[in-house]
Image 1 (spheres, rainbow, N blue to C red):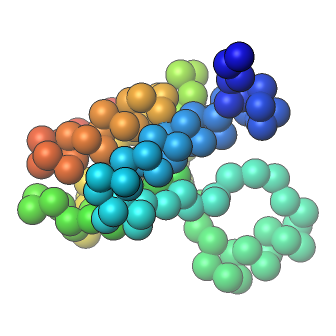
Image 2: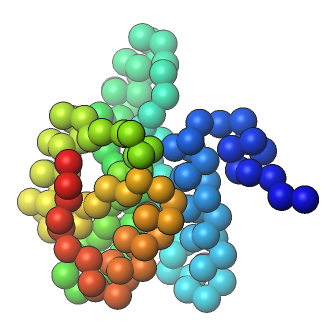
Length: 135
């Protein structure tokens, strides 16, 4: 019997795509242990005003991409992936943060599914990815 990730965890589509991406990453770590450094930056969700102020004081920033890959590939210092739903759009804060990351020598890409994020990661690790971000 198959269960969808979305039904299993009762979550939204973007969360389901993130879980599917990291399930794939965990499987790949068996062959490539360096992938263990790939992580998600929890930067979404609604909070109370007080919690939002605490998060900001602790360094939380608007616009930080969802997935961080701190692995240099010869062209870039690392990779950031912003995961969006098919109808998702990049916010002004995200555009600003992406520009800063590009200026610092990082590759930043936008994916619209877990499979898209996996393809971006595979290409990045093979040094075939560019900083072509369509937003």
